Image 1: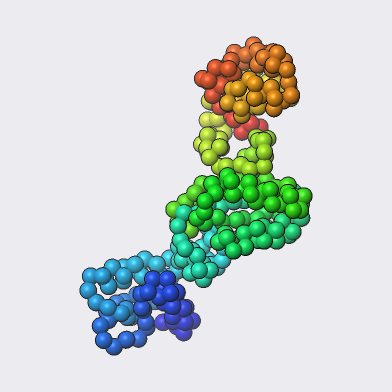
Image 2: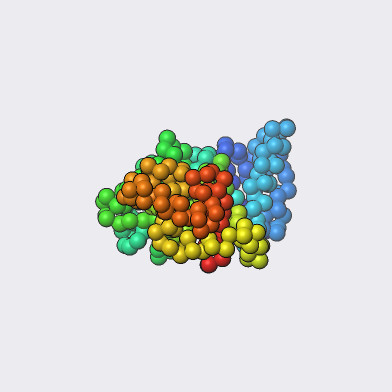
Length: 316
């Protein structure tokens, strides 16, 4: 094994000891120890572990599992950005947690897209999370990723906290996507992908507010994965050819979306749109006459939601 690989293995062994207390070495300890072969970056060497017996054998299996990812031809950089993009391997996540003295556990990712002054926004986010255990990183010139580890706040509450700090301190508005919570930092990449997807879909569907949870768009993502031909087929099966007239009318389209957003509540929708109740009822009745769907009925409302998703996806 070449000198570079041996040096890397020694550094990894130090990380393993700090994190787990398991002692590993490339030379014999002397005393109670177990030697075992280990393949690293395509080369085999003999490694020594302190201890003997069944518990030691379990530790050997664990070490081999950890090293199996880092021995790949193409290694990740081990930094937060590469981990979030899924470019690293499980060992990169382990080393990142060890290096930053972070306890593994449930976590989730945010995608923060400021409307301007991304550099200042990043520095403000760093100030907000300083000492709290979260981590932030610039992903490119326009977006910032934040990883939230264990805490009392819900994902939406934490995302709202980030948005409010940017707006109140700097006057910067941001679109914040929230990924689903995962059980370990090694699983964080899908959560960040979900957060990015939430921001994109919020823009496509003109969603209200600044914080967007991926779970809100689960139906959209399920339909989005279908081939375009299948989406057209489903659209045709609804046999509501005049639905486009509703989406093309700003008043009717906004009314329908707001009514659905407010859980089919007439009073809440009237207040949100600053409309008289009678005007709202007139618009809902007009939508019924055009599409045959009564949005005050839950089943018809669900059908309308699916049609609106299909319509927008076909327009992309």
